[in-house]
Amino acid sequence: PDESSFVGAVHSPEKEEETEHERSDLKTKPDGAPARRRRRTRPNHFVCVRIAGKEVVDSLVKIQRSLVEIQANAKDLLIDPVGFHITLILLHVESPFEMQKLKEALERAGQIVRDDVLYSQPLQLSVRGFDTFGNNRVLYAGIEYGKELLKEVRNTIVQEIREAGCEELLVNEGQSFVPHITLAKKRKGSSSSLQLVEKLLEDPSTSSSSSSSSLSSLSSEPLGYQDCHKMYLCPIGSSKPGEFYAIEAE
Image (cartoon, rainbow, N blue to C red; front, side, top):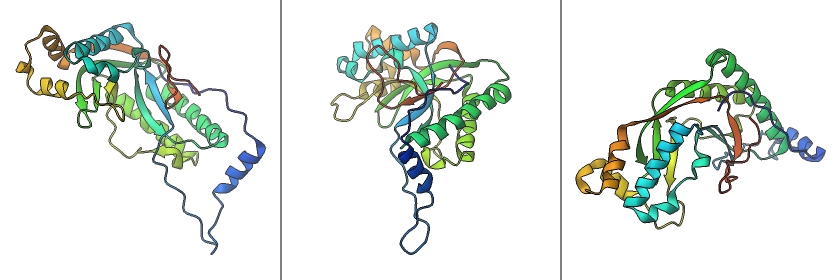
């Protein structure tokens, strides 16, 4: 998952692109009725808090290693520890004009979070236990302390984006928000899965190996604390091995 001000370089927009986008909301159907906006369901950006504290990262890596020891092919599913984060909101941005408007909204949200939500203090989080969801597609660590604050931060972001007239950028913002850190994820086309982990969580006695016992013991244990100071706006798919995601604004 770190969190508060949003300032970032804006891609240089071509004047024609910006003007065209500014007019897009005014487009009408042939009969003069307002055109219906296309619903955006595929995100290409996200806002997150980064998880980089040594105590938490070491604990999460321990879970990943234990997972690979009991299920070797799970190595292909692991998230690079340098990319650990908590996603707050998903977005679909289509133009430099939209990116500029989004960054302005996020900067305002960051100021509100800093002054009225966190009162100039860092966002304190504690991480505890792990589980799977999505039919064993995702292995994640849960957030214990700080969960409600994360929800408040997210709600502030959504509100500022809506007030900026950029609601169409939001993707699935109406879904239930469960703050979590993804540790492993089954990728499209991968033959690997996390079924052994789910089975182990349901019945720890399914394996007597030391790695399984170690993994099972961590399923509900405290995994560390972290103070977060920033939020990041990142393009989806922009991470590289050994590096965090590209950052559009922070």
